[in-house]
Image: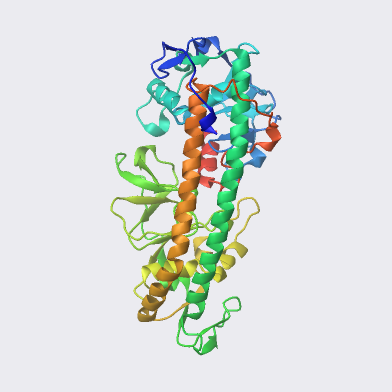
Length: 464
């Protein structure tokens, strides 16, 4: 799509350093001349409660997957209306802005900004404020010593200069972005479906090898466990807690604030793979759930939202790695090779057992003690090595295809981010494009359909 776009014919230097140059017929205004803060409060707290996440934007709390920390009453909460621009003051520098599509009550710690005139479109400025260049500008305006508690105050927000295109051009920009998002989402969904199919085939190979071994003529014996069925006669059957210890080490509240680590949250992990790189952070600014210490050879498995099948083998740790308390960290005993344990818990029998015994509907979870009682069968380490060598060869084509598909999704996301940023800041001209209007109901969030991130949504509730 970008090949039909071109720069404007004439540019002028912008008074905003973060913008650089703008089309000569565009203006810039400080945001105080575009928005005004409103602070209307709920008297009874009976309005629809809205929560914000970076992925979903501002939505009714009932549509969020994690609601355990909701308040009993929203009396005194801030009110917002459709068309308001809402920002999370603690995460503004990360682009956590959202245009409200609902009337409702939100956290008192959010800022509600009302467009000064009808020509100020909050959805356009949401895109501007989320652009990489503006996020850098927002960072310079925040105040605070610890990153997790940086805060953007309204007076500092008011000082930021923002682009002001002509109203008809602004509408064309929004139409283009809706059209782009519609196409991008369809493409990402296709890639995700491919990933699902590849994972299903890979897991079938793993399941066959770790439940029956490589010798099809091997004698079988009843495992004594109904859901496990028959297993090779010479294999040992033990509960998981006998094959591995759980959560052997955790961070304490006395951990130095400058302790730096990579953080594995549930949104980082797929089935047997990472879906994005773990974020580096300091303990003083980390989420309260950053507790589980992970060592080389450990396997992590999600104990929340278990149907996502989030599990990953940590082959080598070169710098400190900490996992969310939404994971159980499994440290194998000498009776089982670490990587073999990771394959074993990826088997369909074990996964199905975990999900079947999880409690909850929107947010099913299982306790580590309950999971530790599930039985697994495994051969001696020498045979484990033979099975691992077989799986290395059998799953390599799938791993390569999965990595390629995920890289393509990452590229599509980056492409969309850069293209939208160029369009909303006037670096590319869309005025000449004749695009059909795309209904808002047809456009899902750019990450819709992806595994939800319970950590992110829980953090949104903690702010409230």
